[in-house]
Image (cartoon, rainbow, N blue to C red; front, side, top):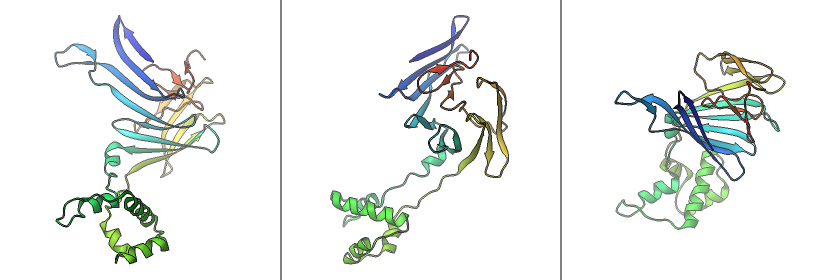
Length: 240
């Protein structure tokens, strides 16, 4: 799908949308009008790309080059419950080698790399998951003992786990599931909005510049078009 907004026959915004086989939107690219190095106004060369993740018909993840926003819903409904935002830089810090990768990279007699058989990699992956969960099974302990190793020795070989800083907010919604406010973990109102009966935004207080695009259940606001995407169609709140 392709959308272009123009003014005086000149494009202001151009966007292209990508859908999966189930018809769910999984990505969009948006080019906006800006001034180039020569001083002319034209669409940006590089688009802003947004990716979307789904759980059935519920949109759970929005990710771009700046952040990832995840939504937890009330069970069995489209009413949002919790908003979790993680900066892209924080996500990058969570990248780590698996225990199997660490041992393979330095397991050679000369300190070089080796390649473990798949069954050994599988056993090490299971051991690592047990260590991270602090529930090492007796079977794993016996296997390590037969190799002359301990859980503590293997744990010392593991890359540290980094817990990224996240912004967590609780949704306050009306009886229809329309978000009215975002409440921080300190109990303060970080975002507040008022709507008409059709879900059209009338007023917004957003001192922290939070991106809150959820409207009525299943609807997602698109800034470039002003329409609400609701999985099966695009809705214009100004027309009801």
